Image (cartoon, rainbow, N blue to C red; front, side, top):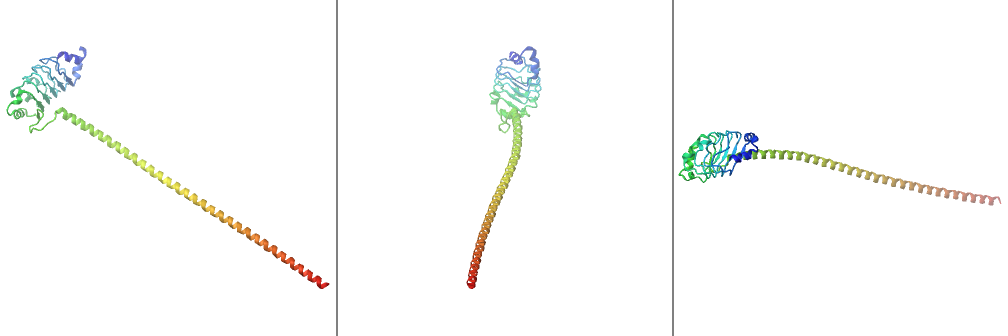
Length: 268
């Protein structure tokens, strides 16, 4: 286990700084029968996994005041849980697949006031009569045992619940962003509708203007036709008048000729 920790920390000069910065540490399958190399220098550690590490005891487990989740499943631990007394923030403990046989071995966990979830799957202690009732009575802070509450209803791991809260917050933020986008789209859509209405009004005005111009042209054409007809009528009147004057003149000449002839006959 010490070799695994050294590999995780990098060079020896950076091991201490790395230990203090780590919030999560996975040492699954780092075979060691005892806690070796893990110290209280990992003061900010919140999640630690030691599954299938070959542990027979938790003796020497450091005080990790921020540790909230500990996974030590599939080891050979049979007791010595009092070694976790310094992990006062521990909420979730997975001891499934270990060699815990009796309720007495679990009593030290009563000192962990924040412990909410405990897993003891595939431990012999689960075969005891009234096992669940006794464990809930022994550990008053416990909410879920082997994934179920006192009423045999399924419960989520504390980490899952925290992640769920984060996902809900993210969902709320996305929904808020979506509403803002919809509002912006709505405003844009209203502006586009107003622009379309203005364009339609302009088109109507253009149509009205063209119709009026077209009508004016027709009216002007009618006036021109009327003027042409009037001019033609005046010309016709002038021709008739000239013809009448010519006829009158001819008649006058004829009368004067007849009068002169009559006078000549009388003189003769």
